[in-house]
Amino acid sequence: METILVLTHADETGAALTKASLEAVTAGKELSARLNASLAIGILAVDSAAAASSVASTGPRLLTVSGEAFAQPRYATDAAALEALCRAANATIILAPASSRFARVAAGVAHRLGGFIDTHITAIGGTETVEATRWFYRQRVEAVLTRDARPWFLLLDPGTHAAFAGQPAPAQIEQVAVQLPAPRTTVNGLRAPAQGAQTIRPDAKLLFVAGAGWTKKQPDGQIHTSEAGELILSFLQHSGASLGSSKSLVDQGGEGEPILPFLTHMNQIGQTGATPRHAKGPSTCCHGEETQAVGWRFIASRRAISLDPNCGWTRGKADVVYIADAFQVMAKVNAQLEATKS
Ligand SMILES: Cc1cc2nc3c(=O)[nH]c(=O)nc-3n(C[C@H](O)[C@H](O)[C@H](O)COP(=O)(O)OP(=O)(O)OC[C@H]3O[C@@H](n4cnc5c(N)ncnc54)[C@H](O)[C@@H]3O)c2cc1C
Image (tube, rainbow, N blue to C red; front, side):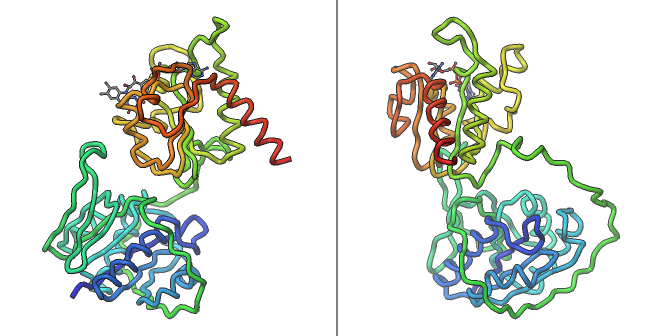
C-alpha cells in the first residue's frame, strides 16, 4: 500500500501556497483516490497554519515546517525541511511542484532518503501501480514510467493539473521539527526588475510571441524597431500576457542588428528554447519554422499573424492564421484594449 506525500511551499507572502503547489495537491488527491492510498500534505512556509487551511478541506494529514528560516529559498534550509517532512510522513510516493525552489533541492532530498526521482512529470496514471508520464527529446516522445524503488519522488511540471481550490477550513496541523544546519547563506534583500519590466509570466493565459519580422524592413523600406517595441510592451501591459520570442529575434543582438532591448534568450520559444503551457498563443512576425513551432507543443489554441501567405503557420501549424501586417493589427488590438479599460 502506497503512502503519498505532496510537498508544497508558500509564495512570497509566506502564508499562501503557490499555484504550482496547489496543482500538486490536485495530483496527489486524484492519485490517492485512485490507489485508495493515504495522503499527506507537507507545507513549507513562514506561516504554515494559514497555508494549511487552504488545503484542509481535502482531509489529508497536514505536516508543516514553519519559521523565518523558510522565508527565502535556500538550499540548506529547504533540503533539511523537505527531508524532515518526508521522514515524518514515511511516504513511498512524493509529489512536488517543479518550482525553481523545489527543483533545486528535490534530487538532493531524494538522495538523502535513498530514493529515486523523476522530473518533468506531466501526468500520473495507474490504478494498481503508479504510472508517471513525461516527454523526451524536446517534447517529441512521450513515455510512461513505473518504478519499484521507493521512496519515489515525482516533480510535476507546472500547468499540467488544475490548481486545487477548496474552501478554507480549520486545519489540524502536525508541526515537524527540523534540525537546521548552521547557515552559510544569508539573504540580504531582493533585486527584481521594475514592475512591468518582467515579461516572462508562466501563469498568464496568453503567450505572445514576437519574431524577427518586427525588426525587418517594412513595406515603406524602413525599419520601425522602436514602434515595434512600444506596440509589444503596450500589448503586454494591457493583456498581462507572457512574452516569447523566436530564436532569430533574440540572436540579432549578438549580430549587431536592430534589437528589442527587453528580450533575452530566456524568452526564446522552440526546440532550443522553452515549451511553456498557456491557454492561447498568438505568434507575430514569425515564419513558423518547425524548430520554432515545436515550442507551441502545449499551447491549447494557436494563432499567427504573418505577411507571408506561404509561412509555416499556413501549413497546418496554427489553428488560425491572419495574413496581415502585425504593426497594423497590434495597433488596433491595443486601441481596443485601451478603450475597454477606460
Ligand atoms: C538546430 C536549430 C534549433 C533552432 N531552435 C529554434 C528555437 O528554439 N526557436 C526558434 O524560434 N527558432 C529556432 N531555430 C531557428 C528557426 O529555424 C528559424 O530560423 C527562426 O525561428 C526564424 O525566426 P523568425 O520566424 O522570427 O524570423 P524570419 O524567418 O526572418 O521570419 C520573419 C517573418 O516575419 C514576417 N513579417 C515581417 N514583417 C511583418 C509584419 N509587419 N507583419 C507580419 N509579419 C511580418 C515575414 O513575412 C517572415 O515570415 C532553430 C534552428 C536550428 C537549426
